[in-house]
Image 1 (tube, helix red, strand yellow):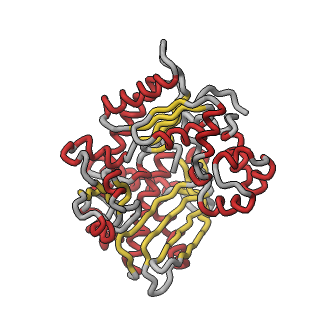
Image 2 (cartoon, helix red, strand yellow):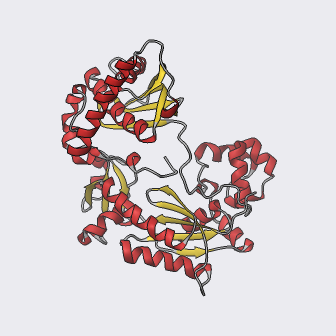
Image 3 (cartoon, one colour):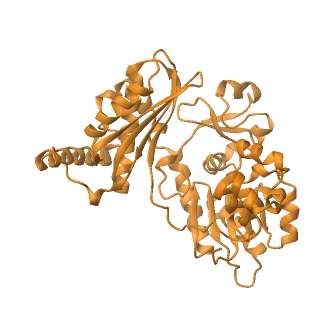
Length: 410
């Protein structure tokens, strides 16, 4: 166990929708859906739109008949990050230790305000975020982070609840299915079902060794946390990356090798930005492609020397794409993954690359980076991405949730 006081959890209510309402009060109280990059599906919805039957991930052509009176907006992660950082600053005023878990979630060490209980502190934090940022949030405080998240989930929307009594915890756990625990979804729930473990309380009361056998060490961690013993710490800094990834949906499925290659290059240029930001080099590249019929295929290749150079990584990514390509298959998603990361400061020397070649490559990369920093993120890019001209014209595609740095999640 770790030495840690009560843990708080903050989760913004319908964050993307709430963020849009901060700058446009005209859409408060009406159904609102936030659309993904190409406007193809709903990635967030208001409670009003949810009540109309629209679900997260639903294609826009299915959402419109269900909620024709709704307002549908293209997402704007730059704006969402502005509000997220403002919320983070307020939480840090209330707590000495805060974890920036995701763009709309925070864990923190719960410390009661002078002269107030933890319940009153949770309410004060919730109210201050609404007053200063304009975003409604729900706050939960408990003995562990797993319990804190369950409590905040149960208090939504715009709730505040501090539960530190074991009897009150058990009432909460008995009412919630085991799938409401982060880390337990359908497959794990089906594994637990034959053992009569259906609720959060069932899992807490189960034999610890059985839980470990069924769900490995991850499940045992959840068991300890549900029983009030803090095992998962608050991380005030993001752990070092084991992998870095860029990719996502194409918006429209394609069977064109030219467009598929253009997406490969786009994702590689974005991935190299992250390698350079985190000052790491990739020792291996993986390319995953998912197709409209449910098929997926991948390719993986080690590079001769860990690198962040565009030309070398593209040479490695091309054969990976060939292995992931299914002839006449309609591809709809790609993920490019950098693995075997090493520090840029520990760069190994190649036996076959002269220092002149390395210096020239870095000079070219430096010029490209300087121009893009001054004139726009993709002012200079590979000509291979020209088939994606419409993507680059749409400003919404210039920034992604992955570009919000510092989060522990993702």
